[in-house]
Length: 351
Ligand SMILES: Nc1ncnc2c1ncn2[C@@H]1O[C@H](COP(=O)(O)OP(=O)(O)OP(=O)(O)O)[C@@H](O)[C@H]1O
Ligand SMILES: [Mg+2]
Image 1: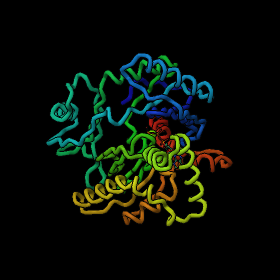
Image 2: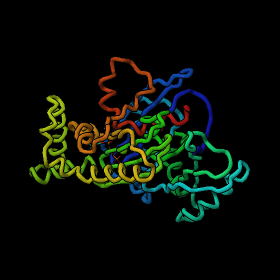
Image 3: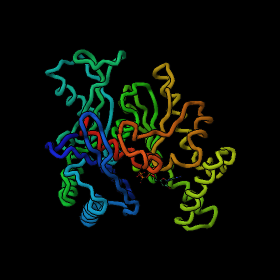
Image 4: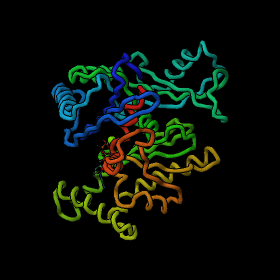
C-alpha cells in the first residue's frame, strides 16, 4: 500500500525487517535504468515485540544506526510487513464494472477478512485472465490483501523516529516476485528459506496466488547440528557455513549429510504438495522453483531439491534487472539470496 509520495532524489530504499536481521538496499533510478547505490545489513537484531514501546524504540534506533553507518542517503523507504500479520485471499467478483469494482471488492472483503474492515487497510490487484489480459468488466478474480491499521501506524511511528519517510509497505512475497520473477509469466514456485521461517508461494502471471509458511528453516539445521554434535548454537552456525563452503567447492552432492536431509524433509514434502496441488487445479506443471533466502545457499541444495522433486530448481538472482560495478559481482552474488526482499522493496516505487 502506498502511504506518502513525493519526488526528489531518485534514490529508493528497501528495508527488510526480519525477526533477527535488518537488511537495506538503496537503488538509484537513472533514466530507464536501475543502479545499485548502496546496501547494508545487520544480523544481530533482537526479536521485536510490536506491542512493547521499548522494542519499538530499539528498532527505530537500530534502523537509524544502520542507515548512518552505511551512509544511506535515500529520504524515503519501502518496508516489508511480516507475512503472518497480513491477510491475503483471492476473491471472485461477478459482473464487475469499472465504477463499482472498488465497492464490490469491499463487499467481498467483508466476507473473507476476519477483522472489521475499518481496522484494515486493503490493497488489491485484478488477476489477468487466461489470455494474460487484465479484465476491466464482467466476472473477474481479485487478489486481496489486508493489513491491520494498528500495525501500519506502528511502522509509521518507528520510521518517523528513525528519520525516514515510509513511502509504502508490502508483504515480502510481492517484493520477491518483483526482484526474482520480473515479467516472467510462467507458473512457478518461490521458496524463501530464511533464518526464522520458510515461505513458499505459487506465482501465476506474476501474482503470488498461494502462500504457505513452515517453521522448518535455515536455523533448524543449526539447532539440529548443535544438539547432535554437542556444540553451542554459535559453533554449530559456523560449522554449518564451513560445511556448506567445503561441499560446494568439490560439488559432490552425494556427500549431502543425512542429518541435514532429514531435517529439511518437511520442506520437500511441502514443495511436492504444492507441485501436485497446482497440477490438480490447473492441469499443467509448474515451470520451475526459485530458491531464495540465506538458507538457499546451503550446500548444493538446488540440485538436491531438483533431483528429489524432478523439477527445475534454481537459486534466484535478484540483481537481474540492476546495474552494478562488475568488480563487486562475486560479493553481490553471495549476498543476493539474503537481500532479495530488500531489493524488491526498493524497486517498488521505481516501477
Ligand atoms: N552460505 C550459506 N550456507 C548455508 N546457510 C547459510 C549461508 N549463508 C547464510 N545461511 C543461513 O541463512 C540464514 C539467514 O538467511 P536470511 O538472511 O534469508 O534470514 P532472515 O531474513 O534473517 O530470516 P527470516 O526471513 O526468516 O526472518 C541463517 O540461518 C544462515 O545460517
Ligand atoms: Mg527474510
